[in-house]
Image (cartoon, rainbow, N blue to C red; front, side):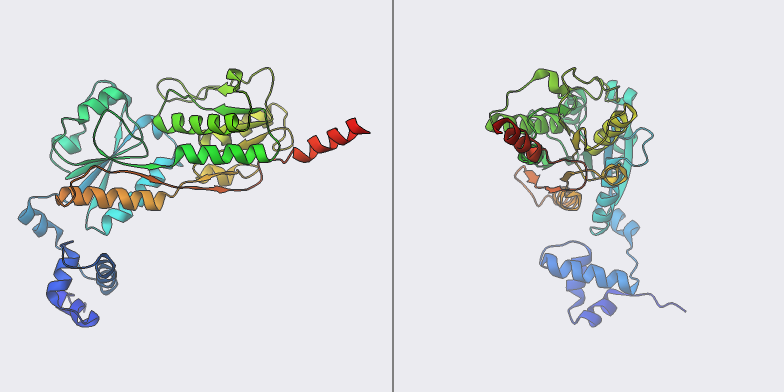
Length: 348
């Protein structure tokens, strides 16, 4: 017969007071973050059951967080980058005794400026906007009366907490990686008017080219999606580049498949790099060199800031950038040695 675990049981196991256990489990001040995490971990291991319903009624909170993602970022793709992101957010929310509710914002609701039911029915205490929404919808969010955090995009016209990956620096570094491997004819793949993330990656790509005295060629800007965010067929330039910087791994995966079906080989004929280090980087053939996004840190930071906002313990607006790192795999060929051989032949 299972015995109900109490706060006193946890306190005796850890050698602290029941007051400390109560503060930790209810995310109150007076206990260090390290001790809070330890207490919550031990409580879970001991099978402590949180009385969320009673707590909710007492404090007037739902203990739910809405996570809104535009349909164009998910669609029918079960391997979506943002679905993986939501999974990590949900796990982080659990550490604060919160639950995440995913709302897939439809094309029609985004276009017609319709707020989700989870907000209208007061089912959430705060909202995380995951991935960029259209500017008109962002304007609508200015009237929201609960805390909001933007995750993986920013908007300069709205003062709101924002957690971003270092898109500019990541694209700059991976473009330099191609240049260091002898590539000078490098294309960028992505609709630069689609999201702030793609724009920042494009600017990082441009910065790397300009620093290396490589002239920008507008023929090397390859579109990947229409205004609604739906992927379109690739239209390659007549003067083919030697390498492609793709705005994300999914696009890189589809580009590699497109090139292979056209009779080319990767990386023998073209080098291809991506951004995110998601599932598409792993299933690509060859496996994709890319920029890894620290989704765990981003999710943890976003949830902590939002919960602090709900508790009214945070005043200043934050814009935080989380760095990534290059993951080198098999989709890039070093052609600098080819150039050296050509020079030797010319000198002979």
